[in-house]
Amino acid sequence: MSELIGLLRYGDAGWGDELLAGLSVTVSLALATLPFGLLLGLLLALAQISGERNLMRAARIYTTIFRGLPELLTIFIVYYGGQMALQALFSLFSDTYVEVNAFLAGMVALGLVFSAYASEVFLSAFQGIPKGQWEGAHALGLSRLQTFLLVIMPQVLRLALGGLSNLWLILLKETSLVSVIALNELLRMTSVAVGVTKQPILFYSVACLIYLTLSLISERGLARLENRLKRGEGVR
Amino acid sequence: MKPSMPQRASPSSMPPAKAGTARQKGALPWLGRMFMGLWYLAGLGAAWIIISNFDADVFKRYGPRMLSGLLVTTQLVVLPLVMGAVIGLGLALMRLSGQRWLSLPANVYMTFFRGTPLLAQVFLIYYGAGQLRPWLQDVGLWGFFREAWYCVLLAFTLNTAAYQAEIYRVAIASVPKGQWEAADALGLPRRITFVRIILPQALITALRPLGNEVILMIKASAIASVVTILDLMGVTRLAFARTFDFSVYLWAAVLYLIIVETLRRLWTRLEARLTRHLGQQARAGKG
Image: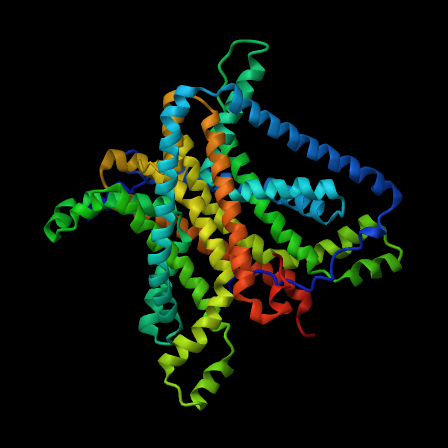
């Protein structure tokens, strides 16, 4: 038993430091994907409520594709496709071999998927804002941009937070898929440890517990954020 | 507190598109044309990659294998979904029983399987079984766990069971209490009340999230390829590893998109058909 715990020790003898390094890659990947995915998702939702037919169609095609493809396939397509495209581009100038960074490819792929789902969340949040809010702001002489930033967005964020929280929890778990293109995130480091120590049950259980902890911490934090955003709704 | 999805509001809540100024009117159509143009370019590019890389040998060798991969994917989706529905319903009932010794284990199970990545669960079961080999051989289960196929089926089943349990739990809890009370007043036993009155209403509520779960399972089934299963994704990866022909990924993408889109549309139809007695209000959501 103590031998098994020794395997998890920090330092040369144990795998604690390797797992921790993997964990930090996992968390950074998720955190790096988030702003990119949120912004793109918001833009896609805006395109869908713009009332402009071509813009709506373009956004629908985007969400249909990235919500329909398996995440694993999206990752491969971005990784190998990106590699091929860059290689073709570089071969115009020189004959160096280009290798796409796995972190970047993972970030782009997960961001594409995240934004497609986020746009649906934002869209239904936009639809939850009564028309009177636009009209009222218009009557007060606010410009469209002011109305959007000062009146609509704060309410949209409140409505969208629940759905976005779910997407964040999904994103955290999906980072594990990037291990297939050899990014040294938590699950891949765990597999490396398993390969050396031949202790799959111990290490994969530990990895699962770490993911679980990440999810539970996020849930706590997001619940707090939700309470804070809803502070205006309480009975005074 | 659990994060909850925002409520879908009445359809009369789109921002007034007419209120836009003349300047925006000028910019938006231009933007729209640009993005649609980009999609046309992307479509042409994908078509060009597929056509210019077309190799009759590769197609002859991997085309049929991709179709058989499709069959494997179908099995990987249907079998766990059905088995998971049974376990999931059981778990939901445990959660709703009000008995701590029943609801606590169900809660732990659901938290674990919904809070960890499916890939990690597959690894835990597949490689973990290898470590337990002597013991599994004693119990006579080694024949089952030796095969990656059964390990993946098991992992998928346990996983979808947890997600389906949450769907059923929410759906059953959403049936108004008065339905129980009315059935009780009519003298119906609780079991019959549940099976004939509560469950049918709950399943109607569960239809949309269940449809989402089916689609999520189709997409998640690609994970099986990581432990050597030759599903659609597995065949695709194999073909790419042998030929370095990127167009196989595009073929796979097209196939997955067709499956998911077709299924989504069929499910919407099914939903409309099953809820037709509920009139307009039930169909007010998006189609």
